[in-house]
Length: 261
Image (tube, rainbow, N blue to C red):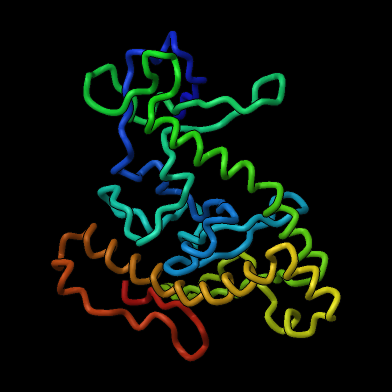
């Protein structure tokens, strides 16, 4: 359940909010959209990819391999990766458009992070301006929205040049192999074959950086399998975390193996 409300001074002047420490609100997010400025940092620790939204592609962080699964959130709501996506950092804040098409700042009232208690960050200052921390979250979200059209244009250019292809991932489980669907990656062979003019166009909009970031980040799929193993044992409370042996997760066929789980 979500109860997204526009922040008004009348309703929120005496309310406060907390930054999230429990990320179970994202536990079913297999992917999360990523802003263009997030790419250089996110690709250092998380796999990036693309999903198809209607007839367009969207750049995302891949957080799980099966629908409804986020392997970066454990059973206690802890975030397991080094990088926390912008949209999660800004929670419980959201942006929405009013009837005039302008962005307004909202909050998820059912997040458990909004309180009438004196602890926490102020939504508003006495001058009816957003509090310092709330303003910072609103700025993050505005940055994301400002970058969204550019990211969409970059993805469209990559698609027009046939640089996005299905990402063939298979997960080996004890009862067989599951083919991971609806994830896409950069076609490296096609990238190497681009004409001089096409390559210049891709490079000029930042698309070349995005292509190489996505290709390099694919190595972090191993982190998802490792997270799955640790979460599995933590949920069973059978083996202390420090005693969980490393998992050989990629075999010679490029199959992520969950068979021992």
